[in-house]
Image (cartoon, rainbow, N blue to C red):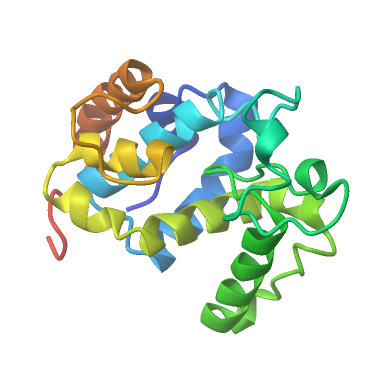
Length: 203
């Protein structure tokens, strides 16, 4: 099964132009990372839709906000030099952030997919905002966090918590923008079922 522009619009809330740019990269990573069932793909797209403002933003908006003011000294981001906080701000559909994470992403993708000619995102951070790498980086994060497993268990809340909070939450609906994520999922699921996407792996 293949996503269409119409399905991308429905599942992410994107307009036609952004759905057009996203559909081919999404179809590629759906195959590469087995994000292929109704639950897996629908939850993936709903969260991408929310995180990017309906595929409107591939790069984190910069204030700097109070949270962004801590990027330079944040132990999990690996920023080393003055200006790294802005240079390596969140990019991609699930927001890879920080010099260290850009470097790790480059290494993981080059190891996993040598045929892709993965750029060095530390040397060329802006490339991570291109649709192709937005999709691949989002799918890489999805796999790294084992989110297919949560999707297979119909656990949308945990998927949202891990993406937004960085861990599985203890209370339902705590992820930022949960209502919007849920609304997109409510649109995505019936649309993908109607389009004939499988309900289970191997179906």
